[in-house]
Image 1 (cartoon, one colour):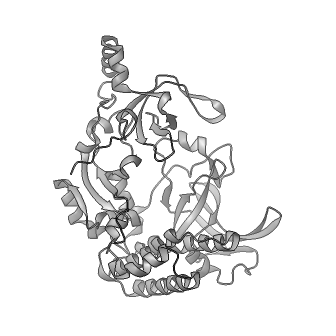
Image 2 (cartoon, helix red, strand yellow):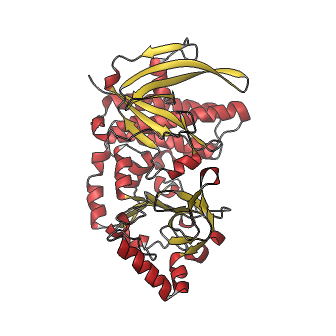
Image 3 (spheres, rainbow, N blue to C red):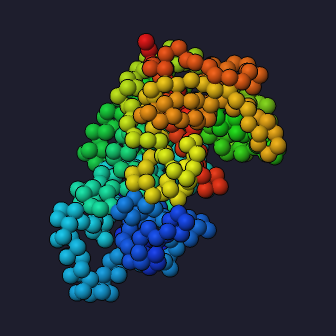
Length: 438
């Protein structure tokens, strides 16, 4: 089943090469690329949005409206022979490193496509959208080009997203819930021979890390829901429903050694949560029961712990922005970093916890922080994993201020993450902490 990526202005879809009709500017309005720079669309607009996300050869990304860009093929057609000579000359000077074809056809490089969301979960109705996810294998022409292979293409008009194969594998090894559910989707629309090989080895991506990623994420999100209730008296019922579904799916994965995407057995109760038909007290009691069951399943699962050391990464630094404090990075600066990723698994050289208070909007609030050294640099990040916080600080926030040393910092791995932007800043946090066996 071919899923075209049209329905966009002038058929500009994810993967289309464009020419910028304006100067591309970055931090402090500094010029990053001149007018006429070539980029590739990695995300198309949706709903009321009007902007395309465009990635340039140096990794810098910019949002452009339709009137500020032109399709490269159309641009060359208008230039005629002059454009052809310019294009040929540019490629000949760069040897094997050129630019990908302006008529790049993403569909021909997709090795796997499936349906996710409510239609895969068995929670759909006649009005449900059809969300598609998949994997594309970047051709050598794209890999060797100045652009490189984008980590993902998003086309909001078709509710689809395709990850580059290496990015997909990295996230699968880290037990990313969206990725694992993609591998086990009951609705597969396209799979090539290489895609079949990947599906045949999908059990290799299952490990006890699922407890951290599925359960940890759900706990942190339920904490935010409780804050919304206290501050605004509102519950995002659809979000709560999907968090419950995630807990059900994660615990079942540890029990069964596969990811059971469909949850028809709980359909009526989950949809009642989605519609706000159950009181919050009942929903909260259910999620606490699911957390407890998840913990019990972890103790009995036959899934491997996985050699976390094989997943440790080695970035030169942790998004160091010279104009900001070490625990945050500016949005403009981050966009200029080539090949940036928002999550790292690292092995620190030293580590200890720090409980401290800070004043925020006139109120004093305690914080759990992690102080560590990595590649000779000192870092001080907030700890956001509630499970780790409860383990080391069961009396928090009554825990007195001060430093807490772990038994052996050499047996720790830190999962460092960037938060979504807040006032043009991404904050760096310790998303979770893994303790290696001695």
